[in-house]
Length: 286
Image (cartoon, rainbow, N blue to C red; front, side):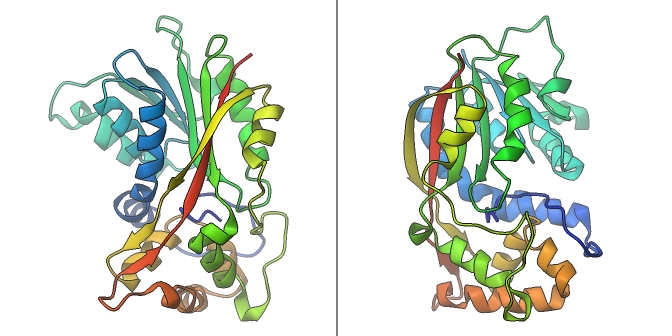
């Protein structure tokens, strides 16, 4: 799933679970999104993101990665096609002038994909990021293809494009939690969007399909830490990765399965801690 959980909006059969999309977006922004901060920091440090950076963030969600780049002086544009509630939270973070607090900085947010970015008067982007990790759900890498194709038309030659993915399953405790928690009645969910094992070359294959040239990679420790069990459940559920399981059974059953899967990672003080490793690939446009 990603777990980061990392939000994906997956098609599935059956009725969609009834959720409050605004509460879920808040849980994502306040609990789950911060789990990938070490990844963002490592990439920005390696690429020396600063005042000369014009960044295009694909699938920007509620905007934490963009906010971190903006704090380094970068001009940022985020696109988000799947979650309008998260995009609204990104606007609160990055465009506070919309709420009458202070003049805006160098930030722009677009509802849609890269093809919806139309700003011929602005300088071309010199960095593209796709921080939503791939490698835990069937088809998640292929889902990036159209966005990457559209994004590369907005940049010049040799521009870095950053892709992110899950590390080896044996080094990602959350992968095991996701697999265990998506087995209603002890039977694995089936279907083209089900969980799968991350492959060594997931990122390189995605780059190849987009016509990008790999130019470096790295691994970053991104532990998932939660204040308590309830906090962990809210954070993981906010990704949307458990919706297929909730439809196949019911939310109460999914909650039970998830808590059981998380139990080995609950510490004596009640906190929940799961070590994970994520990969990133820096590829360049032709």
